[in-house]
Length: 416
Image (cartoon, rainbow, N blue to C red; front, side):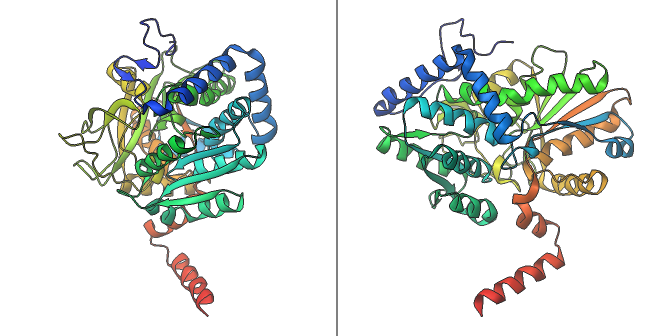
């Protein structure tokens, strides 16, 4: 399935979704970016340079790990995990930012900006900027700054300026809006390192292109581990959708069911979750430079969202997934905050893995479906990130008395 072969002549569209809806002032900058990206795609040496960079700097290829304890306990399908948590900076985000860093070099830009929710994209962008020698500014909703303080610490110490956005709901969508404003004012020397497969063309295609390295590796690795078998189901969490696009691309042409796992938050009901397709609460609209399904009211105003995972707390979904959902190629489910908490405890205690809260949404739905499958069937989960960044949120959610006491003692030391 070649999603990027625009046979109908509408480049940047996937069915009715996608496009580029931007202020005219940005047109030349986006055209420059698009031309550079297309040149890179046509140049075999570019992908070779990218793979070599990811091998030497990030530690790729990341392995696929079999989970015998969890598989046995659930009594159904055999469960495997693609370990994107083992990347440098702890998530799949590094795949995209290093690729965009190479493009930024070709463009001759000296400054990068980025939005971030969970902080992993901001952390990765700050890391890339330090390596390539770019000036760096990260926009992050004030709510997310507070709940993802460890990542803010690393971003700042890597040399990035972190701006706490106080507009709107003070989460990811508001950080994206601020990035767009910055880009309009500084486009001559600035590249916007958009972190997920959303936004105006060419970002959905470009981010998907760099994240495809996940699926390319996973397809080969799972067959090596299973004697040539492909998984029956592949699960990945979906906020904007970059990690899911990454792993799913390795199986689009195979008879494999693909399941995107959204943030069910507090459960069904407007304003209680960030599930665009699983709960069917979203409608088609245009915002932040592209057309897709958004959580919005009848007037087109964006609704509030809720999730225990900052990285899934977003109003829209990438246009490629909107198209694939309409085509019936990808199924979407939602995991609630409570399901995520319980699944995280289960995975930690049975396998010693600590997935990020975002990734745990994928584990939650896999754990739910595995017992209903046969023991000769195979599940592959994309562990898009590790849970270090979530220590404060997880400790609160688990009501850990020892952690609470530790925080009180630390606070007392700073006050004295």
